[in-house]
Length: 158
Image 1 (tube, rainbow, N blue to C red):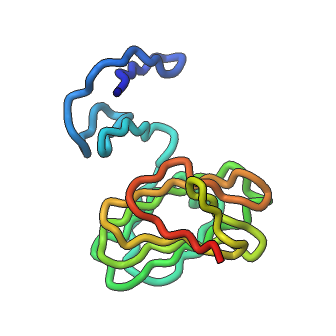
Image 2 (tube, one colour):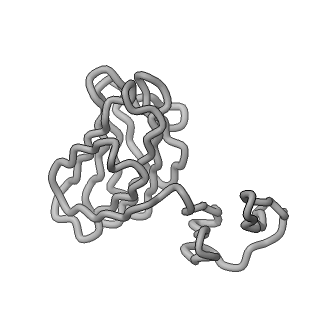
């Protein structure tokens, strides 16, 4: 089931359920993209798109609302997440578009929850599966939580 969404000056109005044209990846309007039959709002969520091909990137609060990809990667790209306790509400999105791992690492006192799996404190979440998408939000003082999950992500649980 999909929903038709209208943008109003006071916010969004859900009109559906009605079928949407397209099968995936199409930009349906300035504020929405259809990804694998999932309607994703881009308005107010993603402000910047950044491609990194390798290395370790230390994320800070100023990087919030950024989509990271590994298009044309030459090696694994590691993203160190900020400490959530002093940065609640930060949002980062990751898209695997290369053949190497994207790895998210939490600090030594925090975990990353992906669906029913939660990483150990200081643990990581990684994927090298093309098309995999993960959006994380600093949810609690000691936890990041995935609010969008597509594809395959491996969670370090021990």
